Image (tube, rainbow, N blue to C red; front, side, top):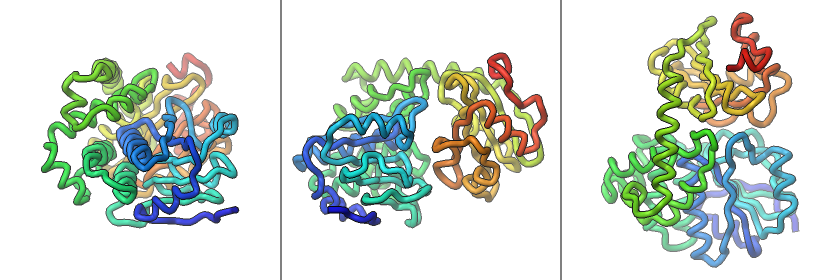
Length: 354
């Protein structure tokens, strides 16, 4: 039976999962919010008898790309839960019960899916917080609160006013939560982008201090990733911005996903500019970039206005105040030209990109 797309609250999650069969798949982002949401959902579904698998979207991947659809098409699963990866018109696996748990601005709505989104709430709950509320609707989940807090802090929503964050702060201590969040976020920013150790550590730990203690071997992998990212960030901080009109671009070359960190750092220094941190070394043949601004401006609308013809699903998603994307070199050149930058910002070959 075909089920039309519907928007639901976390309390309706049990009803949405009623259509699931055996061996469902959880697909999540590799940052602190996505990983926490994925772990919360995996534990909650396992407790309710669904016994899911998980797939973390890694470096250079997109859940709505043809390549990922092909990957899922080769697998058998009783349902798909997608969290912290946006909401798109593209169905991940047609004919399979699908639930999307997400807090990003939708680019469209897929057919035959249940969408649990807080995009119209004020404040907008993170994906991990939505996942925690879904878990509570499924049964006992109080011990998963700290995971929701990790995701909230990771998405810089710590002071948004969520009562769950206040409770987690009292129960676990804000210092431990912040340190654990930073560590969990490190692997996805490393050159490999492999966050599997972070996911495994969150699965094993019972509280944020377990993430930091060294009780589990995964902590060492996270610490190594943190050090790698720190070194890369120190180098990128030496690069001066180039400015054209109201836009400032900081372009550098690193295999690490540090462009969001660079953009956020310059946002506070260039408060009258739209800041773009562009990384030519993250993936060969591509420019990955992050956009931030202190201006009262919708970044998604700004990017839509300057969207180059060849941009795909990796361009201009996320939040009104924090977005970015990935463009091939030719499309990057069209993009920066539309912003008013001269030939010095164009990329013609690998030497230019370095």
